[in-house]
Image (cartoon, rainbow, N blue to C red; front, side):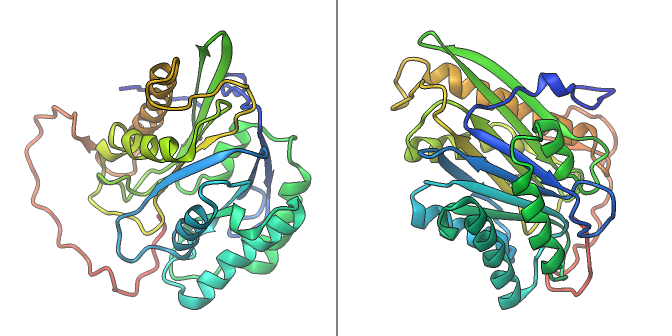
Length: 311
């Protein structure tokens, strides 16, 4: 378990060819900090994700599931905002999530169904759409000018440090990169918990294989962490494969498949460990050997109780 964590070195978070990064200070909740992220993926890229098991899932989670299913994973962009989770916002929340996809699609020249939206922050509040849409324009205009450390900072809410990790491997003589970022510091329990996580590689993978790996990677990393026993409404882990390196993993038995999967799992575990090390509550995990006496659990609040909460 890492201790005395520091901000990842900018150069240590390696660029992933086929993934362009743009960030903006949209002022969604706080002025003067990055709070909007756009990732643009190369033509032919694939994406897969796993999402919250909370029955009260937020609007962007519902839209992500719809778009991944309808596009068969042929995603061209992601848009992530912090400050407002767009959770518990009903039909208006769904419309706002879709509107953000439409704006990204308009600016990038792709279909709205090829854009995945994500939100994190305070629940039971509507997105400030005027500021959000303006920020999307700024982030798209900055594509290529930002890096993975900027991206990690842009998705933070109550995190004390940005979380990122990278690995490089050789696949058939081709250098392949795996880089990931995540946010999360509270409302963390098994089944991913309060998190947004994005792991990208420049290898090419078919979407069904990527989808299977997404589930397995989550089970080997994020699903093993518990902090305070709450499952958020917005949890999302997404794997992205740009294919820009030219290295192709056609199936689980292909040369290099095991090494690539191991690299993705290692990046995910590093991110999950950073979660636990910066958690807002006394941490525990499935691997914890703490001998501290057990404390009586606090009564659980009703999930329908009207109480604004940051996740």
